[in-house]
Image (cartoon, rainbow, N blue to C red; front, side):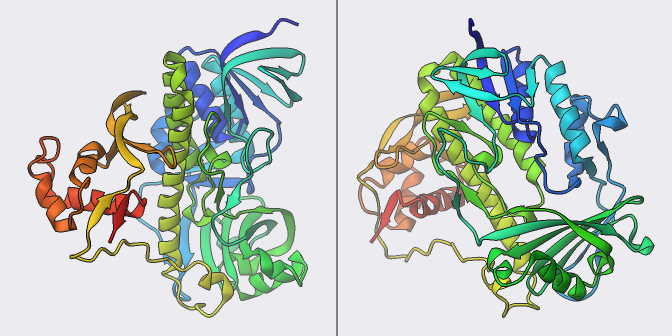
Length: 447
């Protein structure tokens, strides 16, 4: 059978893969999205920030209720830090997703934009071609949005956080809890309960995996619900829907392979921005693919840059989640909470310490995002890792490499920056912070 040549094959039709397909199809690229047809979500409901409303409107997902996107009707609150309910009132209403309906409508939107969407088909790679059902495709580039699952050609996800299990429970709520979404800390984990105005409530329970070793899931959940003060403690006739791995993890830097969304790096569920993260990752990946179609020789570098971007996004979400964990001090002696204490990762540089750029770091032409594409600019590359950087925030790295070619104190390096044409317009604080970030990256030796 003659293979159909396409610009990009996207394996995995969750929010990240579907958003990438939609973005590329909008630019008139020939895109194929293949999905296994099974659920990509742990709970039936998910809330997203109201700021995403413009995006869903642009995709046509707010036009019909069948799209599974509605203005969030739930009142949100938290029992966290103490035993009182803290309501989050006054904020702009976000959106609530009915995930099964939403995911199908999302893929329909990608198809309407021009992508070829194949759901529930068997996928088999044969060298440079892919057989999907009865069709054969020869893509220029392949993007993996396959979540945590093991996938041929990809290294395994490595844990970067405490081993965590998420258990989704469905049950009958108290009528007085209708219309609420409550996140609640308990001694051995936390619970996020969505109670719609009709139908079953769903509770997502986060537990240390070790906590499930000596007891059944039902026994542990019974203890959690007995201790809960919010709607989770009032669920009746509850039953386990499913459980899944919720450990933070990533695949590290990937060269020659574009991996996005949860396939690249997962975040702590407490960050509560899974769909937003997927959409953001897809936007960056779309820039990578579009650039590679114009500059195919850049593909390995672009894939590595996308991995670096995903890891940076994961780190930001981790800090956000762990700052929230640190607000809960009632259960500081319990293992679950000890393992989620915010580490102090601030760089401590003595005023007299001499800073020197490591010998593996050298000026080079590197890639930097510029609008919807990557371009080549002056920057620096670490030959040991292959990582290339153009800027740290607004600070050009090439100039810092020149300044720190000889040992200098941090104060002297910032003062020297005033004489560099590309740096003198920046504030001393910006230069100071950029140097500390390079120290944290181990690009700069501190003696």
